Image 1 (cartoon, rainbow over the protein chains, first blue to last red):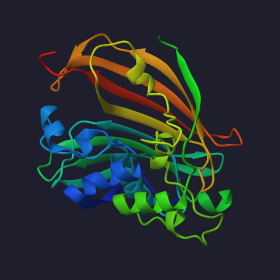
Image 2 (tube, each protein chain N blue to C red; image 1 turned 180 degrees about the horizontal axis):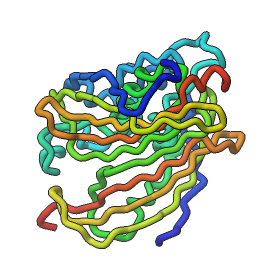
Image 3 (cartoon, rainbow over the protein chains, first blue to last red; image 1 turned 30 degrees about the horizontal axis):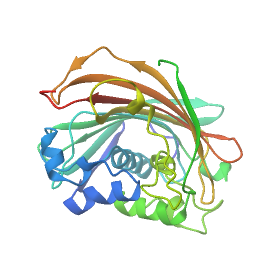
Length: 141
Length: 152
């Protein structure tokens, strides 16, 4: 990715099947033992369809999609997410996004991205607003 | 309680390369900055793990337990907490070996609202995460919905 990024550019769609096994992986690693992430009975008692992924999984996924598109030398500056519908065991996360704004701050290019996660039934699950700085890492190391 | 400050709370675990790789395996993130030990400057922690480093351990030999989230301490009915939204800004990277600490501030508690999952309150907290050199790594504003079972 270079400085030819323009407003309206679209990110390549990324799909990721979230098996039951993967739902529990992230809470385990992040010490997030909230029962809705591993106990189907608790999840259903709270009105969910099944166990659901945790917030940090949403974050990790949108960060990965944005940085993979921008190039690994880019740095995440800001991320806002709003969760609307759970991703449950067996669901597929589908991420798509587009560039909302490009600006130059102190000689560095900042890209503001709108990113959406939908499930396999096209239901919106998570909305992300992400700011990255292109090529920031080499000068920072 | 609005404006109440909690902390500083010290992490019970250090930032670790092993946990970074386990996280990236869960999310399936191939970013070489998280995997490649030879990358310039060494590996860094994914920003999405920032809250992880301050999560309480379930058990310690001394019985020491971190304090609950401020959102759980607010004197309100309803024991169930779900995350609604989260806004984070990142200033520098956390790296293996770092020991972080956090300060948390209660920003807002909404009037009682009824949603599809139940009736309760939206609780907004703001947390600042620092490393052992008192460098601000990131700032996270989180909104949780705290509610009880529908008939409660």
